[in-house]
Amino acid sequence: MENFKDIKASDLFVKALENEGVEYIFGVPGEENLDLLESLRTSSITFILTRHEQGAGFMAATYGRFTGKAGVCLATLGPGATNLVTAAAYAQLGAMPMLMITGQKPIKQSKQGRFQIVDIVNLMQPITKFSKQIVNAATIPSLVREAFRLAEEERPGAVHLELPEDIAAEHSVSSHLFAVNNYYRPGANSTSIEQAAEMIRNAKHPLLLIGAGANRKRIVDALKGFVEKTGIPFFNTQMGKGVIGGYHPLYLGTAALSSGDYLHCAIDQSDLVINAGHDVVEKPPFFMEHEGKKVIHINFNSAEVDEVYFPQLELVGDIALSFCRLTEILESVPTHDFSYFMRVRENVQAHMHAMDDDPRFPMIPQRLVADVRKVIPEDGIIALDNGVYKIWFARNYPTQEPNTVLLDNALATMGAGLPSAMMAAILHPDNRVMAICGDGGFMMNSQEMETAVRLKLDLVVLVLRDDSYGMIRWKQAGNGFPDWGLEFGNPDFVLYAKSYGAEGHRVESTDSFVSLIEQCYTKGGVHLVEVPVDYSENKRVLLDELAEKICLI
Figure 1 (cartoon, rainbow, N blue to C red):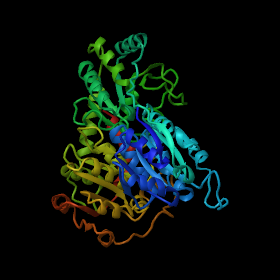
Figure 2: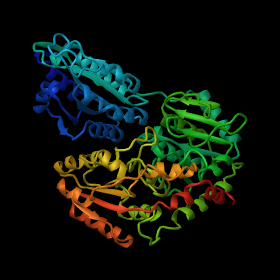
Figure 3: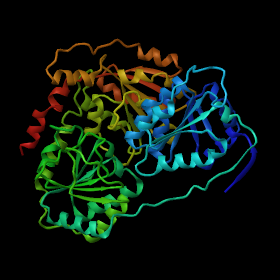
Figure 4: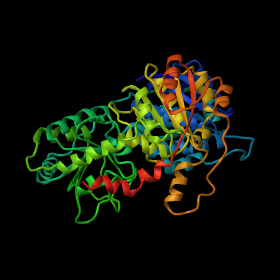
């Protein structure tokens, strides 16, 4: 435990961050952060200046998603801090560990009245696990340690510390750092494990559901062992995609919608769902009914009871340990019948790949997904913004490794695709990384193209152009409303990319897509590729009638 005497408060704050292993801080500083910025200048931490606080927050949250360690972002008071609100909710709902640091006017004496002052601590409390103003410089190490502990422990999320200008500038502070201890969660108790095993043995059509909470390294291995030994088929939520590879013969697919989806016939046929790491923050992949199917909830935390989710048995504790213990006492059960599930799987696979070679232009989503899969290797990473294309990639894009498809099905915010891909490119410089954005979502944080160019990232940014907010337009049509109010104009994306110092391209034919993307990766650097898309397939493929056709087997 390192002790400090006569140290400046901002230096002590940075020492506490270094003690937590912080590698990067993303942000837009203001005058209230200048002492902290100067302390960062001589630290081991890399400061990355972004063009908007929201982009900084999305990058920090994605760092947490990849590493399990809290990503850190920085903003000033007032408008700078309020610009972090969406990123805070993104991290909190998506269970991504993140620390936000904001400045504030001096709290002991100030001559600026209420200028720019907003109560950010209370503003952040509903969308964070912890929000605190530092009023005593000597408490900096303990508050930093507590913030990181809460951000990183299950269920992970966002935390916030406010460092006022006069506290940061204090000199002659004495304090000490706190050791960063590893902590381990126990597995579920043996009685619950035995009850779960008995429910699995007594079921006839059990299914395994994999949610976002299972997307942890140790859990991946434990789930693979469980599936191999029991032979139970599995499916995943959107944020659980990739935990077990999508080429596995027992993989049914991704539940991309909350009702009327093509997997629902299989889910409806099951009499027991073994739920690994899903919670109700995602759109539910099935709805429970009284006297209906049974559910075993296996998660770090107990189930949040909901009208459509009220499991009969809960295994609360370390998910990996719980599955390891279940695997030890279970064998494949002769009375299990998975024949219907396998027929559904066969039909789903045929449906998903039926139009992989469709030559139409503008490109239809199925061809786009198939061609992206051709140019992205198994360890490559795609980061999706939020739009109707997210459903297509969630369904049709097979994965082999965890965290190679970054999507948000919790807050489901627009504008996160580009910053998330930038973070992936920083952490995985040897892997192919692609941001996939709609034209609406891209323009919400498109200024971060300058940041990507300045950082000399290798990154391809697909901008799918339909000149409208396509998902809402699809919903509008599905609800029987007139097509109105959702179309907009766009810049010339090729020139727009070049104005930032990036390369700009426009796909002119469907057959040219793969070769163009290959050229971008071969050349390196930041490339924006405008892709005109035809979403006419949405109505035919994403609505109930095709799901019903797949289920009539």
